[in-house]
Length: 304
Image 1: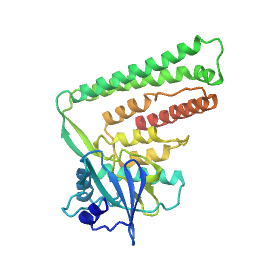
Image 2: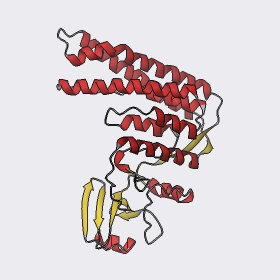
Image 3: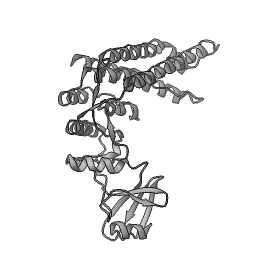
Image 4: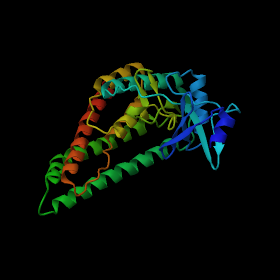
C-alpha cells in the first residue's frame, strides 16, 4: 500500500491507521490524509460534478498521477482525501443549521430535468405500496400479539395507547402516495439534483463550513436529503421547524416532490422490541417524537 501511495499520489506514508472497515488514516512527516475504499466507481462522477459546479463546501478527493480520483488496489478501488481535524464544536443545533444550508446550496446549484423511462413512476409506486402494506402488517401483528397477552408490560401499554396514531400515519402515507400518482400521471420528466445522502454530525465542520464525505452522494430527487435526516438522527432532537422552513424558502419544491416527501416521512419506521423493557420504552418514545415531528413537516409543506 505504501508503494502505491508513493507512486500514484507522491505520498510518503510513515503510518497507516485503520479507522473503520473502509477508512484509513495515512500519516506522513508533514500532514495526514484519509484513504477510503469506494463502493463503486460513482465517486469519480461525483468529483466531476463537485469540480464543475465549484461546490467548495464539500471535501474534494486528490487526483492520482493519471488525473483520476480512483486508483485500483488489488480487487478494490481506493481514493484519497485531505485529513481535516474535527473542530471540537459539537453543538448539534448549529451543525444541523449548517447542514440544511449546505444541502439547500447543493440542490439549487445542481438541479436539472431529465426525461424518465416508461414505467419509472409505476415501479416507484409499486415499491411504496409494498412498503405501506408491509408496515401496516408489521404493526397489526404487534398489536394482535400484545392484545392476546395476559400480562402487558409498560412498553406494551405505551404501544397500545398510541397504536391509532401509528396506523393513522401509515394511512396518511397511503393517501399521499395516491396524490403523487395523480400529480405525476402525465409527467414525462423529473427534476434531479446532487444529494448528499449521508447525514452525520461528524461530517459537518463548523469552522471550515464544510461537509466531509462524498461516499454516498448521488443524483436523485432532492427530497431524499430531508428524508435521510429524519431516518438517521440518533437522538430525540426533532425540533427542525425553522430549519425546514428556511430550506423551503431557498429550495422551491414541486407539488409532487412535496407529496412524495410526505408519503415517505409518514411511513412509520419498523421498530425492534426486545427483552430490555427500558430500551423498549425509549424506542417507542423516540418513535412518537418522530411522528409528532413529521406532522410538523407535513403542515409546513402543505402551507407552502
